[in-house]
Image (cartoon, rainbow, N blue to C red; front, side, top):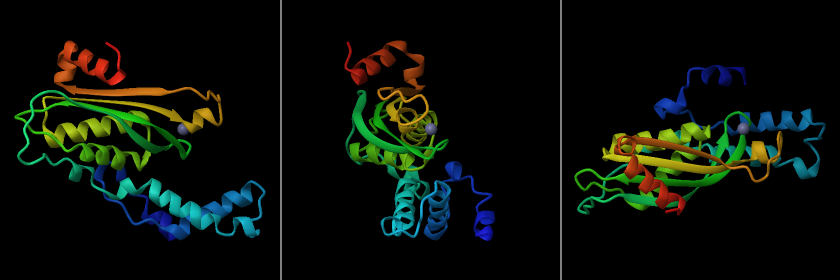
Length: 208
Ligand SMILES: [Zn+2]
């Protein structure tokens, strides 16, 4: 166990996209310790499979660490479009890195193509998913999606807005069940032209 932990010291996975395989046994060991720590008996029938299940769940919830987000930013061949593109209500499920607690919400992505380069809508959703399936902060998730789209597609402008509800706020702590956190990242033309930004924001929020 000590060796495993040592091996993982130098991994700045959020930046490089390189990441070791998940060690399910190590996670399961940790879950058993949590069960013992809260005074449970990990050996009782209802809990015997729990460490393994939780390990598999964490593997899935962090699967984006083991994917290269840039692979999703490939312009559609042939199709050209020059007007603003907005994809609203992409569902996201991520995990807050401060509490390892899920946060779920919607991601809205707007961009203005350059030289007609556009991205398939499913690719935008995959981009949001790859960054969501990591330990995240909502702020970083928002800028990661915006930066990767901006660098990969080289559009005139990108705007990403995420509205999410954090279980670390709704289930514990201040327990504000309806609290939503809204974050945005604005790049390129959306940053320099307030009118375009306002137009995109109005389309995203549905307000004129
Ligand atoms: Zn949290």
